[in-house]
Image (cartoon, rainbow, N blue to C red):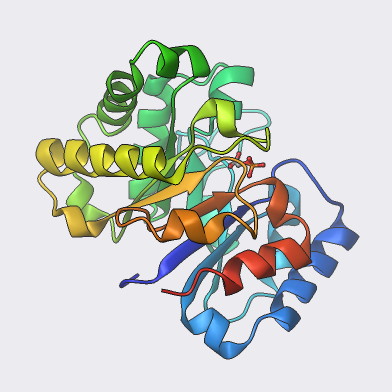
Length: 253
Ligand code: PGA
């Protein structure tokens, strides 16, 4: 993915078939070729909208899913396999989002298994890590991040992935209109890159760290101006074409 910023739209459990198609159509029509050449855009609709959105994709807009299951196939009611996702042209999967960790009790062990399964199917995981407010206040941010990273990537050879992407998403900043300061997000990005490079023996420049948490079209450039932040994972502002396309237009390197 060279040196372009990566902008991921996490549509979460929003939209209907009709509004999902309308959103992707509006995103496409509002972006120029230059916008798309300067930035890697990934959209992550709900599973049930992957197929219809995939039909609308154009060059430089890729598809991701918001989760996957860790087994290849079988009796796992309600789950979605990497093979199914791959079949629908998903190149990426968001793994370990804090909403899944906190609401659905997803553990580091499950996240590790999901990343291993992504590797089997050559899907690139976008691993989400981040601390709670009280962990930040008591000075434990780095310890939490290191623990999440090492457990998520346990016994995984990251050199086999085409790209290593981590989204730093402090939990207190998600959906709150209270983003991290760009400097703090940059410090976390440096720390994440160092931990991975040191423990997984890959070059720092091959690790991409996105910032996520209350990103909008006004604050995006403050984050991207920071040296170690390579893009953003956008939630709320990604389901409105006008705000998402403004974020992309403000994300040129
Ligand atoms: P937000 O969500 O942009 O709405 O804060 C980010 C995320 O959860 O990925």
